[in-house]
Length: 493
Image (cartoon, rainbow, N blue to C red; front, side, top):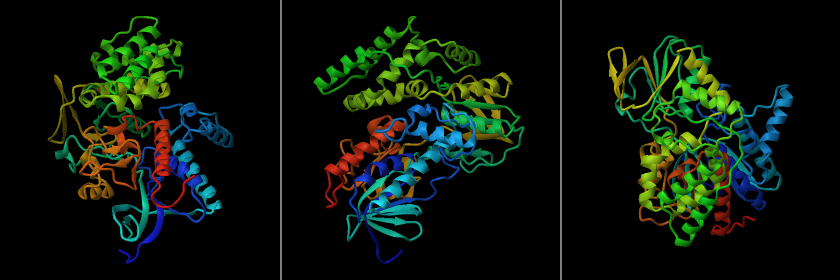
């Protein structure tokens, strides 16, 4: 370690979508001479979801709804249009993840350029922050893997999505088992592959194999076996029952899950041309080829879906509803209703569904529910499902981002803060925070002043963290909290 720390007012750890959104909120308000340091080990790494070079990996939100700038909702669409014109290509409604990653990097670079021109002393450091501890000359000391040490009044932690903690830890390190779907080596073309998970990451993994020309059978398996629904039009329906329910909850200072659920059902029923099949929400079983074909045909035919119109209209209510929900109902939600929310609330583009259907139709892809165990057997793996067992040569864990304490501990900077009692794990994922400021709560339940946590790390506290608009809103809230709690003597206008 170096003997003397470099002074900074703000150190930001991470410069992905979350970090970029935060930097764009904070930098324009800093006075000339303020030192702002951003530390990121590799912002364009192919191992990241927005670094993937595979063109079939698409963002699952339309470009028109994916701006990182709340004040300019058309920003990404304009950027994408310019890129397409320069390349002589049509503008994609659902562009590749890699394109969104380039947009994020361009917006970060522009924010740095603008801040530097305004006199902010800004350093962008390619390094890994490995520890944040109480400092000497300033409040916090940030240590990097290279030995660099930064002393800061404020630290913003924007590390993005964490690796999923493994449901089958006995298999970690076993040949043929891969815990990271974004770093897959070359596999035998005819290998039998089992992909654990049936949502966005698992689908992208199956598309990676298809793009490589994989000819062996691929199965996607999870507890539910539910693939995401398909992204339909962005139209919204009136939600009077939800609005009335929320007003009553605000007046009472609390919300019950059953009341919110009934209000949502009433609005969906009112927006639907036929009575909704409520059994479909939880009990329809794994997604079949016929189900996917039927849904795609409905979208192609322009059939309006009341449930998605209501979900579109009610999505801004999720953050305040989650804050009002009583704790026992939050626990019930994560145990019983999280999967239906993700299935319906994080849909896939129709183009992705067509690729999945093509693989299913060719007999190369199957989807299973009832996953409960994976066992190493001679020359492969046994995938134990309810009522049957499938066999695979290769198993890929594609269950998505992790938020439990084991996932938190995969990052040295978070592990150290947990050990020091400055971070505490949230029972529903990520870390506990004071929601009004996004400062973490320590082992005694007190806010840790001067540290701010943004992004997927606050899932348990705010519920929705993987949506671009939600991330941008978080960044705006954190910037507002920093302005209100300005104890460092630096005015953020």
